[in-house]
Image (tube, rainbow, N blue to C red; front, side, top):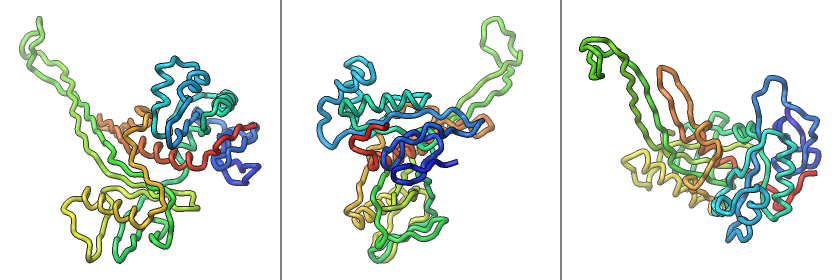
Length: 301
């Protein structure tokens, strides 16, 4: 069940305690359905464009951390999660204190961070005649005339760890007779980097995601590129040229997510665990989109 904001009338996730769009406090009587997993709330700090004067001192006071830790937090150039709390009232109170100390912060619950806005994969991209056409499952998105407010790109790491065991008849362990069977555990790790680009259309509640594996087609007049990565980088260059007013971010490497390991680790069976950086990238990308909507100084009632 979704919750409609009493101020802007926009729809929020049912566990949200603050409107994602205007910062208005949502009614605390709304509760998540029984059986839903724990849904903590994150306090997110949005650094200013220039020097964040006084941010370290404010964080030391608000978060009750030592001066060294506060300085490390204040050095971040990108939005970051300062603290995660399990109860809504505690998160709301911490947000009030942060804003009162001059910190630009907002609250987001874990479920919203994982699911909103919805990300729609782009299957094919065609570049020709000064236009970029994105083919997604919901239809065709053409630039121009459609505008995009935010572009987020990076190369993400995908690591696969395969664990297996086998029976060996050889033994080098002291006191073990040759030929006595024993279990040998083995682990093999492979990794790769994949490029990704999120486009957030203006006035839309979704993101379009282009991955390096997407079909990228370039028309006449554009040089052919020998690799998928070079084609992808060329696409980013063309899109930026067509969207001079869109904000662009490629600082994902600076993102420090407190839940990074939990968010990335996925078991796919047969002894294989995948640490997929795309999950962490999605969190970073959504936080950037939310930060653009975060009120400069809104204290929930």
